[in-house]
Image (cartoon, rainbow, N blue to C red; front, side):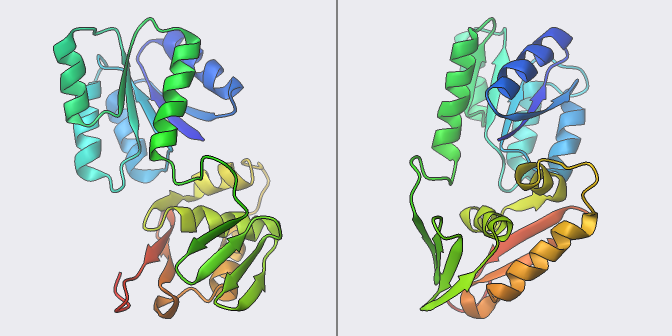
Length: 234
């Protein structure tokens, strides 16, 4: 899971980075709300953890702006020393998904992160072999996809890439997010590698309005799988 963390205290950022990285997540760190808001507008994150009191843009203003401008908006946890009940209510009413009061035990932070992700994730809680999206059926055991009665063979990477999109239709994924998630940010990976995989799954799965989906390139950002209604409109 890719997590954005914003806090103006170095010790808090480093603690969260170490804790969540050890738990298998990938963290990107920010020193203030404005820097984080800029990143949210151009990149993709699965979760945001933000302090309340920060320079440039405070946490609650960031929550409000993110909810107003990002579609979809990633889940947001506020981690702050402000413990007044009204502060908690204000943050949750502004759109925060959870509120953690500093100092908090590491086990509590991890449990809250996992709880928020369970509530908001499109990934099944327990692994299942078959996942169906419209006319497409994904078989995790064989890394193949059925379109109607036709079985389509995919490579393991193509299968994972396609499933990433189908689990989150209409969500924009940045190139950096995809490369970190599926290629683990291999430093010398040619940029055309991702483009080739995108082209292959477009062709193999015949993604188009006639089948209810279109894989759209977002210039300067990444890709989005658009879902069409029965009249072929997105």
